[in-house]
Image 1: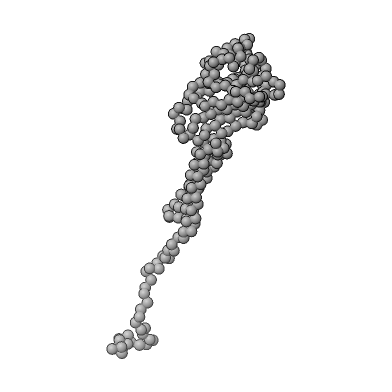
Image 2: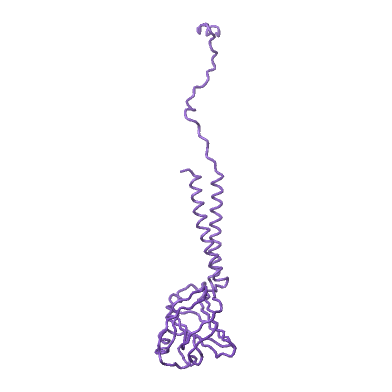
Length: 251
């Protein structure tokens, strides 16, 4: 295998790896933006029951994450229709939330479709009306109200948690608009670093490909060219002349 072929193969591999790496970095930057945040749009969420509840989220590895990556933060913004009662949102330990909503009718979110936005839920039956959620002390984070808007921001920590959205009075029939977001501060820089590494690898591959295309194979001599007899410098004998006479005449 010639050096030109080896360089061409190596260049092709580097171009593919560099291109995929650069695309991955660009995707991270587009998805999480420069501050590492990704958010949904403002969407209407409703339930005729007392609460809309997420499935249990098992958060692990947050405490062991590198400090430069930053601690993940979850945010929820609720906007109530004018004149409507305030809507509550909180994050609580899964065991405490389960006990609070025991025998209380509520919907559990099982899946989310983005386009169009649809919440898939599973109805949990019950006959009990719980105490107002704002009076409970087990929440690790709960929203703060500002006019018709309620904002929650929670820095994730290891454990099992559930997000609860319900009326502040715990009455049935939740109807509000919600925006959900997750931020990992260091992801924007990670995306930029991956993009730069991918572009460097891609550039090296392109340079090697140019070098390979510019190389020319060395010409090879045709078979038998090296065995041809060298021409003689001695004078040829004319017709009818004696070679011995020629030799004597030369003396």
